[in-house]
Image 1 (tube, rainbow, N blue to C red):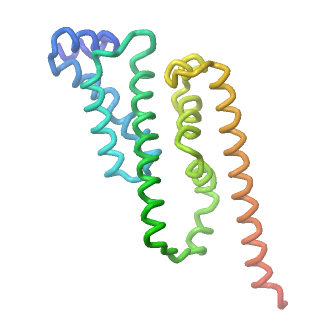
Image 2 (cartoon, rainbow, N blue to C red):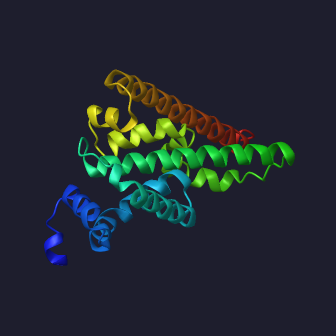
Image 3 (cartoon, rainbow, N blue to C red):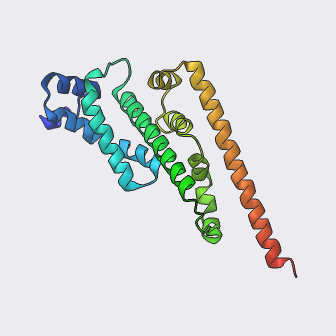
Length: 201
C-alpha cells in the first residue's frame, strides 16, 4: 500500500487523511515536504536547531488545520504559505525581543574585518537578503525559489496580482540597492587597506 501511495497526488493524500484520519497518509506528505519546509525555515533563521523547531511547529500547525485546505490552490502552495507566514511571524517576534535586549544592555561585539573580507564575495548577496524585511524576502523566495506564478503568490498572500507585482518590483529594487551599496563599501575598505599598505612606497 505504501508503494502505491507514492503515486498519489498531494491533494488525494490530504483527502484520504481527512476522511480516514489514518497517519500513513499524513506521514507520506511529511516525507515529501519535511526537508523542503526545513530548508525554507533555515533560509530565514540561519540556525539549524531553530529551523528544525520551526519545521516541527509548522507540521503541527498543518495537521491541526489540514481540514481547512481547499483545492483552489496546490497543496504545496498552501503549505509554503503556512511556512512563510509562520517564519515571518517568528522573525518579527525575535526582532522585537532582540531590540528590547539591546535597549536594556547595549553591547557592540568586536568586528573581525579580516575574516569578513575573506568571505565577502561569497556572502554579499546573502547579506543583502538578510537585510530585507521578512515579507520582502518571502515574496522573492516564492517567485524565484519556489517558481510560483503571480496568480499563485496572489492567492497565497491574499492580495491582488497588481499588489504582488508592485511588491516584487520594490523588493528587487531594494535588494539591488543593498547589494550595490555592500559592493561599494567593500570597494572603499579594500582601497583604504591598499593605500595604507602601499601609500608610503
